[in-house]
Amino acid sequence: MTRDSSTTGPTEEKKDTKWTDSQIRWLDDKVPGEEDDTNASDDDEEDEMPFDPFADPDPTEVFRFRFVAKTQKGRKSSAPGTAIEAAGSSDDGTESINLNIHGYKTGSDAVWQSTGLTLWKASTYLCDYMVEHVDELCGERVLELGAGLGLNGLLAHRLSAESVVITDGDSDAMKELRKNIRVNRRVAPQTGDKCNDDAHQGQQHEAVSAEQLIWGKESAETFLESIAQTAGSSVSSSQFSVIIASDIIYAAVVIDPLWETVRTLLRYPNGQFWMAFAVRKVPVTIDFVLNKAEEYGFRYELVDSQVDGHDDSDDIAEGDSETGRVFIYRFSWDETKADRDRICVGVKET
Image 1: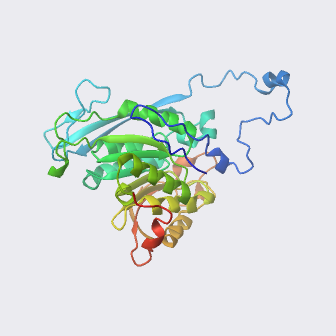
Image 2: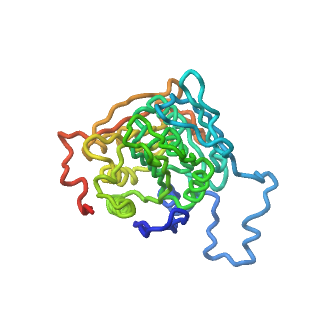
Image 3: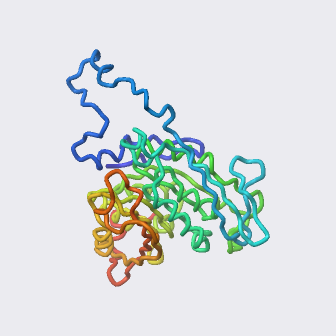
């Protein structure tokens, strides 16, 4: 699968490839709740979809978050009066960040088709971890994979990452993601804001954007070339120092494309990939994911885990996917295994 790599102006939106994750999650190509109308006549359609008096009249939801982060040197709150104005900095050296994430309720019909249209458990745990490690995000190029509504990427943006690209492959999720960026975008300061590096003086390092990215080596290379071309920079300088992701493990078929993507887009040799994983009833285990990481030249470390919750998906009742424990892993290049000559095969420097 490929992506539209055409360039657009700052206010334009790229046309996404029509794709939803139901095409992977439901291998028989039949999404629960969808009727097979191949042989149905127009007269039968009303009979097949009767009015449901108990259906939720408003399946949408606004997920509201408030994070308290350590104030970085020179990092300012959003401009007063904007819709995303932070609660403000306090005398104890912290700052409150409010995010309003628009999406759908977890049990809505839309989520059966596109899981990225709601928020899942691991994303909030990754947010807490990001707040605790804000120093490692400040001034860095950050990429979010499988972002859905974009909570993690937007928090990275508000924590003063130099630039953030928030991605998902699901075209339905991309619509909500772009809306959430518009609502939660931080206003760039008029004066030279900076984190800890005077070299940032006068630069607007608050950039955040949404891009469709369907995982895989070829599409990741095209994605990286497009970013480099737009920025007028080399491919290597367009790679990301930090990649973040949460709740992205749902089928074995996506694991190789995931690591192909990380391998292509993560800066070598000091890049970091932070991933939050929640134990769920899905046909793939974290051990499988970790073994694949090693095959692709990465080492890993378990850096945080939720105290409560089930360790084994067999202990989770059907439909109760939020009772599993959450684990946060950090992946980095294993220079004893990584073959640098294979990392950017087919990607030419510009």
